Image 1 (cartoon, helix red, strand yellow):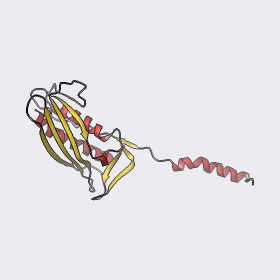
Image 2 (cartoon, rainbow, N blue to C red):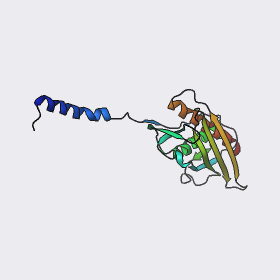
Image 3 (cartoon, helix red, strand yellow):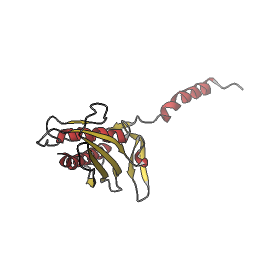
Image 4 (tube, rainbow, N blue to C red):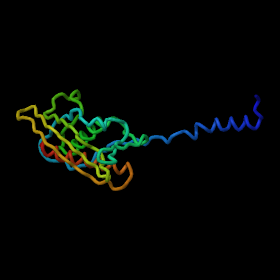
Length: 190
């Protein structure tokens, strides 16, 4: 059976337009930012931020939000720029470097200097917005000192309300919550 010329042409145009109609928007990619802090005075500290433990439900490229008591939501096109645990580790190290005395060195890997006086371990129980949009950071952290003294373990629950309804505002609130955690930790390190 032969299709008339007009039908064949219409079919070709429709086939060419189909991929454009089915294409999805490009993903928006986000990262946690360093939050400026006030540097303390005193002796410099050398510290290492060990690998960060995060809940498995957050261990995905998409940004996770709570949409109910037992329901999580995510948008396929709103993503983290790197694994969240790595990003938290890097941002926390940068935030601590802002807050510790001048000359302090904070790394995310013991291989850079190998002579840190302090190692920080961090486990997040939660780091996501609640159904009302408020960012909740539940953290347990431990300071291990190489020169005497036992480990110090503390917990923090920090909440931040984003300044707007956008994902960018939400990520800024997450960065601010991490900066506040760095304030608490820095006070224990000096």
